[in-house]
Image (cartoon, rainbow, N blue to C red; front, side, top):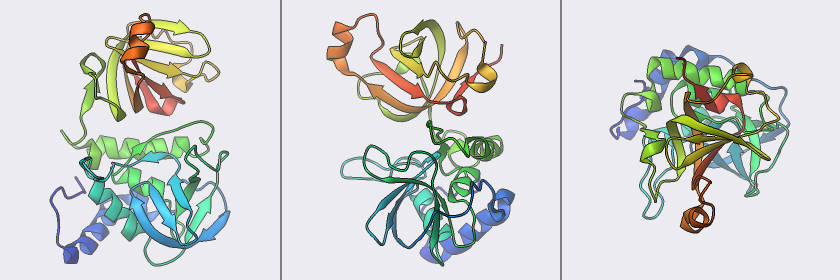
Length: 269
């Protein structure tokens, strides 16, 4: 694994960051590039591994990645949150940033949505995923670089880097979901029922359903029967609450929205 799990002295972290760059070939390339910069901006600070504060006051949320949450109040830090933030600080040091927009430019919180590159033109999203310090999340309609970013995550997964190291980030089973569970998860389960209304719903062997967009073909899953297949999905586990569950007994209390084929994997027989 390229990432240290114990707190390192400040004098060591710079050398450690350089070592990460040498061990991960894709970080040395200006890959996952969508086009010329839409804006050249100055960084005020790194909030966490996927969120930046610019000097003009705007907050930028990276497209295509979700990094571990840092400690906040009574909430404990998620695995490798500090390492992810410090990686971003060093990757972006030394100059202004380039922002490249996709289709949606703002999220529901008012944050700017952008692909971010350092002053050398290297992709921050690609670097984070290659180092195993963030998960790839492909949310429609901002999917222009989804295939490239998915390949960077797969490289880290195959090499067991960072969050993909043994026992670093738990894989939650649908049957084990309980009150209090929520937030970003890697979840696995077996499809027990398929239902369709406005969305396509995969009901799993537990109190969880996966919501798919019926207008998307989900790539290599198109035309495949979901019934009784084991799947793995990445996304935000939403608890609709006990009142919803009691008044909608035929529906699952928890759900995850999978906007594209890049966030869901169907296991082979």
